[in-house]
Length: 335
Image (cartoon, rainbow, N blue to C red; front, side, top):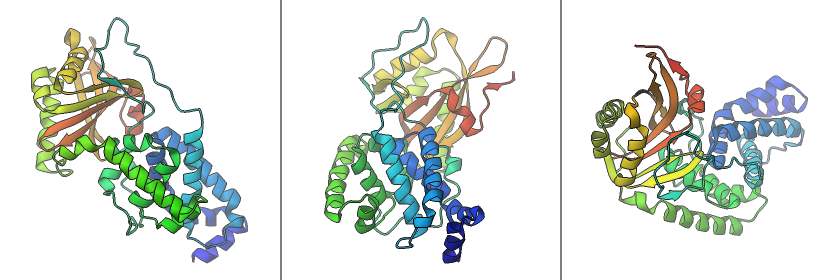
């Protein structure tokens, strides 16, 4: 069947090309997201990938599967994007009359965006290869995707292809026009760099299982505290080394005291919020809606939680322009 579709696609039949490639579209988007850290950039590169595949289908010789061929194209398009000078820059604080607390440090991955879990529901039939080392739930977490962004481009590509997707070293070398020795060396350096970056997480308790009573209870407690503007109750739910960030602004806060200063800023002047639940990167997430004097509630941001045992170990706040990607409105009506 695949051979017949390839022949028909090479003859210019668009329907045959779509049947060959569409089953891989969702997993390729996630692959591009891991490499680029931005859904917007991943979607752009995915379009480039399918255009390049259509233009190059006549040269497909079948030495590898269609899936592997598409991953080769997508990976190299992502590498080109990573090397370009067009990455989004950090945004300055722009809340008039409000001075942010002194950050613990300034983050580097200001282009980070959350990935809607709806893009993970339609899983590929291809399970990770036998050489994969990273759990699939971990491989899409915000912490892991952030760590990937700090790797040199080729090390990033090798780590994702080998440890997340489980492609053999020989196939990865062919995808990158490299050698097995070079791939092995790059993988060793990438693993060490990611391990150093994520060493602090090793002491954290694992997150409760998705949909479990423990996860639901922790999330419900967080929502109650946040919607009540109860800073003491909110901080009590955080780990001692909780991490707060807000891409594309570079400000990052680490530890309960720093998080408390940040929460003081959020809830100042009696500001109240409603949280509308969703999920991103396999993690609990919320659209944030600020109460207005007229009773309406206006989009004020997007929040993703990282859970550790019965505590929250990270809060990542994004801009409200991302809400439509999660099917959330800009405004909620009065209650």
